[in-house]
Image 1 (spheres, rainbow, N blue to C red):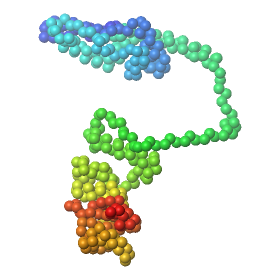
Image 2: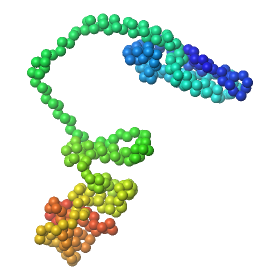
Image 3: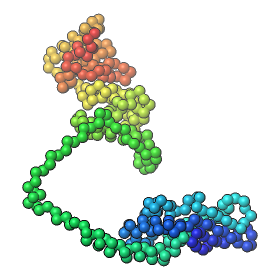
Image 4: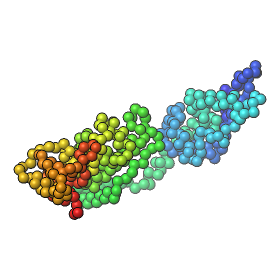
Length: 347
């Protein structure tokens, strides 16, 4: 196979005894195009130095793109011809040569410049010529440029410091992350949908920090953080998947999610906190339940007053919590209140 300006020629052995003649023509750059290419390359000192050292940096493709050209030939710039009787375009012999061209470029990247119409020696000579004239031009330019004398240290430290700019206000609501179309690698332990959930959750936490709304729930223990995530999944199949991954039953996680939705960490604590308040502290809960269900007996045990399927619990924070009985057990049914009668609303 021979590489020459404007393409490649090769002999390919087919089914016949005589090899087929294959020609792969590549459009060569015109003289004005080569001038643009060399001007762009010469402006990049690092690229020029690499070329003069016999290297062809991959960034050269982008440099040529700045000149409005493509160093790598496109489909419209390649034409194949073969002496075989095959009507396919390109035929298998031409395709084989194209594959071999890729191997040639791996071994000698300068072959790409040759196919575009310039031999390696010619390109390097023209770059040397441009480089030889640039120092004088730069020196001539700097001779006429004013020299910045700088500022004396005394004056700099005596100057009054400018006021710091007012930090921008956070947005009115959390943003939604822009996610890539490609799924994470299998080793990441999360799929594309899971990544979207994590990114959205991170945006909400960052927004809370920016607005001064607590610590963004960044200090939660694992059980509380799972409940926080589950609160956003109530009524969705994803809650069952989260329960499985957390090693919990869906009933337990649903109960925790309801508690988090109404009272956060205090709601989770009231589900299991069983303590004995001072004597007479539960009378207010007894009275509130009696008003709601006058014909139902109220039982008081520790910090819990129960009437049928309703239960009022007194938290250690001094607030009252309303729970209702379900097939899961006792679920928190409303936000806490300072007065147990307020748990049932004005009616």
